[in-house]
Image (cartoon, rainbow, N blue to C red; front, side):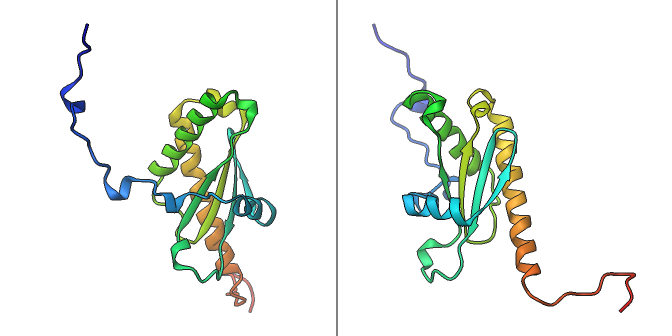
Length: 157
């Protein structure tokens, strides 16, 4: 008995477009980096995940530029199969959520228990919204730290 294979998968590999990939350089991998984000970073809460983020400042290394994302999925989500499936869904949601924050940021996505039963589209929307909030807060932080305040409209000078 033989299985029928569609023509698309008969030895023809489709390459992902370069802009659509989630490169290894965009992964947060080291335990020390995760710990730094948890201890020094800020949090954004959503319905099915908590997103920790920390802007990298003055590390001087050009290879660490841009966004780096890590995922923490605990054993409460089930066995390795369930945890890896959730990580793949979250990784794909991050990949599809461009544009990413413009700053050099480390992000850790920590899903809540409800994320295991949530469909992909709501997860994607939450990741997109989290990146919008992170970008907005980082821009506001840079503007607020400049030290020069403009008088508000209508207030006496």
